[in-house]
Image (cartoon, rainbow, N blue to C red):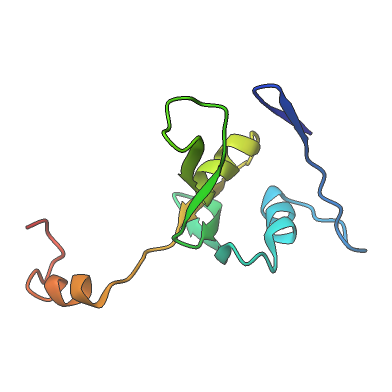
Length: 118
């Protein structure tokens, strides 16, 4: 698979171990297993389907770009956004960012027992 970003072409190839993955979820699980940018890989049954989630660490990723719209010449984004840009056919596998838990946010939530907006 190839993905173009401006004048740069990224070649993507997932080479699994001895066991051939059968589903897109298994392919993504194999590709991201052990990646420090990934919080977890989950599979859930919802809406009558099996859905897979690659959940990334809640960190901002920055890399150089040729976009003159940024003062520093960098792109700031999340891992999940990069994954969505790279992978086209994910077949019920979705990319998410883990929740950044702050103790002050947790304590503030205690006053809203049903989690409603303030």
